[in-house]
Length: 372
Image (cartoon, rainbow, N blue to C red; front, side):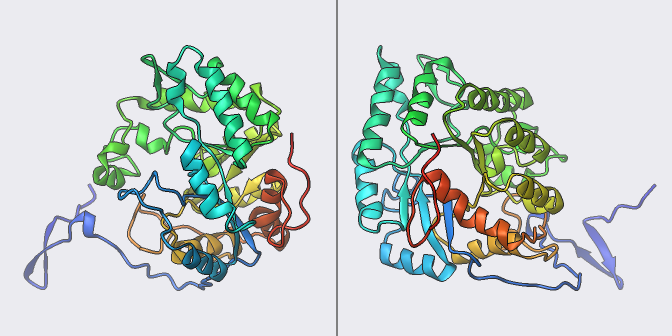
């Protein structure tokens, strides 16, 4: 039987206690070539950012100083940021005024959907009218939060993304030329028991509320299958699967979705899983290069965290931290670079977003009309 190192062990005759696992941060002993990158090689469009007020604990803006934000964007070579926090009504108006109208081409704001409207007798029609109003105000897309399918209930019934009651909303988004950036489910590990086999155990122990183990893997499967049904039913509407297509642990599934449905896109935000399987991820991007979008999901803005993304996409560096803060925010792993060719970087960083959002600017030139 293999010997197990005890918590208390002896070194040179002196009893010593090992560190707690929560404080264990091993330093890699590999001799590696490192290529830190502070700015994207192409003027980039970040399609997954949060700049509004609804996610802050203090109720203020995620970016208190827009001038400082613009300077930080310039330093990272971010031409445009998509703000997903528009919400609806007065809050959307406030976001558009603060960002899009004050700084054209630098910000693009997406609206959200007010599920509470569905409690009314004419709820679906009201939700459609709300979306149409958001488009008239200037929203350029729709952000669907992960609460759809997990917590949103209408008259006591859990509402799933592919529920027929929502079909008019998705059809309206397509007719208006508004892409739908949708976050379905959550990391697979959250749906599994928080035991010694769970690769995100430490994250779950720090934030117990993220665990969905009580729902189990059947809930995850239902959500992922519902996403496919949704995309298949509405071919005229473009859906962006957030966080590596909502299933970054299974890039074969994501690749099949991209093969089957030309209206399905993905962003790469907040999933170190891509760097854990760099050859598979790079191959997926190369094979579906017209529908992969750069996104970071970093809030508040942190240039050091963006540098991790640039290094992931542009270098072939091996076994480096996926977070600038060190430690293990989501799991005890390192990532390796995808080493994308310049032509692929151009598409992922910039031109794909320009085509999808349908705008041309000094930041994103050579674009075409938005897909319908």
